[in-house]
Length: 331
Image (cartoon, rainbow, N blue to C red; front, side):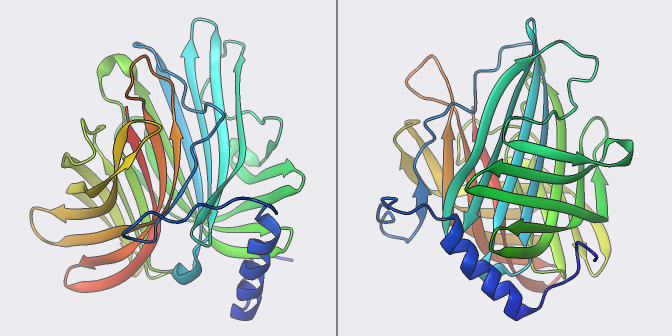
């Protein structure tokens, strides 16, 4: 049987409904969404997953994001792997999260230091996150094995590949995530980045949005912003009607700040995407958020936000409803 065989709309609705029942822990207290808008912000992790990065370290980031195709009942499964070369070896962090029904759940978070290696960018399986690797070290599946939390994200045929000069690339695949309650079809976005802290070029925010199979859009800030409201030059790509277009002159700007007390910072709840030529524009609003607060010496701490968003994109005079995720960083 083809592991990526499409399922019917009735099967998808049933799988999504059962997924909410199976993956939601019983007896979990839920806080009311903040006013004035119904935005669910998950509590900060008690496990540190964004440890301090020292000047001069080389950092390799690899992120794989599964998104279901139905924007009205979006399911998000981000898998994140980060390794950095230290004097003691290779410090590795990995985690997996689940976003659905406008809420987030931490599936796995692990940290460890391994022996020095000539290939520190390679992903190593952990205690609960496992890998199925095919030819040429390509990841075929990502597996979570931590009962009762169990799922598998399978990576199928490549849809397209976009690459920057240097050590960055982005690939979009057909994908499927299998939960105990059933399977959900969608897309898998793979993002690979390498950067050196001594160069002052820490990467900034990125966003991936889609309007089903008709439109896929990725935008990445060229650098980390000094503040959440600072407009930052960005670049990105669209895939529309099987046609790829690179957009070298974009701007991703956060708006309507909300306080996040654990980090003593503000986070945006709306974003604008613009370009100087007005060929592409977009407005996005926050649906739900998961915030990871890192280590720091001062009162203001770094954070990483996983934001489910929805909104509208306009490209060459056409308008598309979109849904997806923004990965937001503040150093």
